[in-house]
Length: 393
Image 1: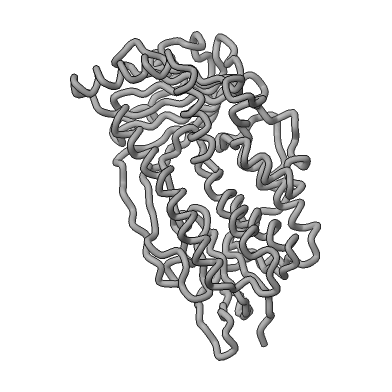
Image 2: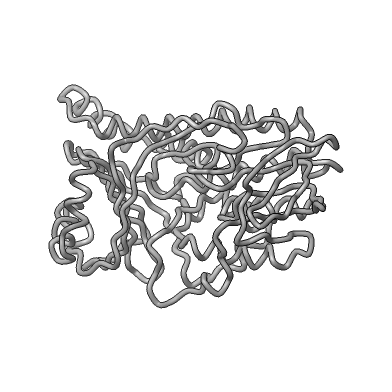
């Protein structure tokens, strides 16, 4: 005996839960399948800020506001930033972006991922037409004679759906089951994330310094601390992770040129490998990839989830008013448009990584001159900020 749904969403992370919430509001009956139970009680905040944060763009804020999610966030733990400083260790140029140049209140908001997950979870649980299957996982996928996709779960339950949305992340097991191949490129780097307290205030500014070994970002938190994302070669990264807290804080202070004074203390450090991935095919029959299951970028300043939220936004606009979510021409339109838009973001990040990670003398000179030119031109900065916000959405 099978259960019938309009849409099954594989993965109840930020993008999967957002998709379920957005599409249920369009009148569809949704099943959410999540292998790891993430109840609301496990997402409650403590005094210590979580290490995993995202820089939510103004466009993503609008999406979450429309879904009623933004108001469910603990506003005291959100930190809006209105400036961004970018500079390179080999050169004297600094680019300063400011929200007032594009007539916006801010450039984005730094939010703990668990804050977003909790608000999405609460919103989804308030919807009677969303049914949760957790902890559970899809173990087989088949098309049946009734023109639906039939999914067998690990628990033995069978789900039939008009459409399967795959949103279970960059290492998606559901994508593999569906036979949709991802191309991965390993950067041979790791990112170290942690929260730090500094001698001077962060000034509600996102700071980004490009080192020869990789970018170092310092993002503002609402309690006055900062969240770091330090990307570096794998060998150096493990050496840094092996340092005790005092030595790591000293190394971080030097790498950041003491822009915020001494790094006084640090919380737990986490490290994870870096790379990018993409899929040539997002849509096959009644199966569609979204979010990190479809595309992945370098985590420069924690922006990746914005691409996933914009996947959800476009998909909802294309199929939200239909009786049946499986409309092949509109799903193809979604695939074409979002593949193009996310490719721009992917190449932008890869290009920045190459440009700022190259120490050749000629490139250093051109890069430094270009940064001086950008800083001297308000028009150029406005164009770059608007384009960056657009590409992150």
